Image (cartoon, rainbow, N blue to C red; front, side, top):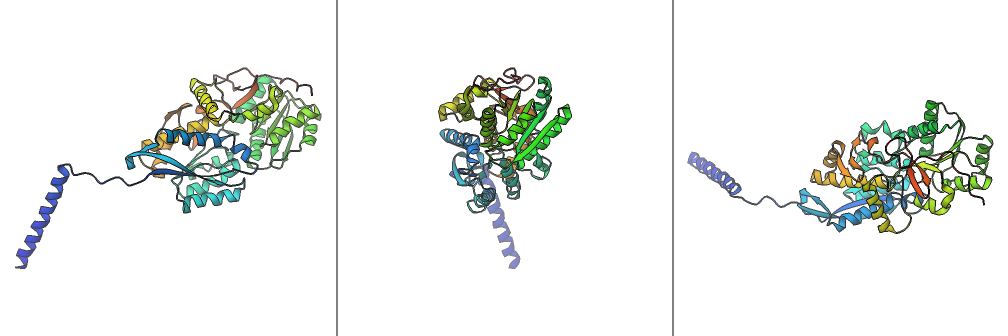
Length: 414
């Protein structure tokens, strides 16, 4: 009796298996995709505080315009959900405070459980954020900031993708070669005493030594210092050919304004963050003729760059353009969006692998990362110079959009 009962059970089970197979073969609908209505992206940004002057004019307008652009197109198609998903943005003000920024990052990831998090602002903040993103397996697509110190750590930070070009990637090597081309005989450095300034000063010394140009003065100032008259007078007394100011706004503005006040007009002035912004030209006007800075790109760089410049200026209608990072931030977000579509999921690890191994067409042309760094070949320029109101690319080679001016013209008569 038990044997007969066992045979009945086995037979019934086989019938169920065959029925299931037949239903699949007959086109039984696959399980419905998981439900999701939007992609939630968080950010801890300097809405207030001294870094707001960078955030408001660099990555800020770019990511806001990208979110608007994506949502106007109906969102990003994610195969896992079988539809386009619009973006919802959650932003917290880090008040330009590094500790608060890191706490906001943890909140966005652990409590808010956002899908992605945007980059913080500035080199030091980027350095502090990278281990947090990596700890939680979140992609960090860099923005304002580029960290020489973190370069050697990139193999242990697989979720970090650095976007902006920086000191040894490949700005100061190009600047040193330009100084040789111009015949510069001596240089003075003023730099801020934070990670950005210290790294630029260090690599600057290294590169000037490489090309045999003496650095006869190298002095640090606190971040956001605005009184530089004594240091500028010291550089003037040394009769240096070139002054490099590795500083942030508003210190950048003080360098130019106070150099004009004391009649210090070296043959070359190279400015850090701030000198690349359109608002900087709006403040100083024709006085900036021949003043150099890091970057660089402009509407002459390519037809795609010209189209983007028009799109940006039409959206914002005021002088918000960033001639250092703006084009590259937009390209990075285009790259990121295509990586999501290619991955077909919002799984960070899958998207990360796509980003690390793929080349996508962006406003920069073919765009890819090498070991966590945007490939040097992708940049539109490394050094720019204000000429007739345009931040021209003056790198040696085919990306140059204008011949450099050296020596720079005298300051206008007060």
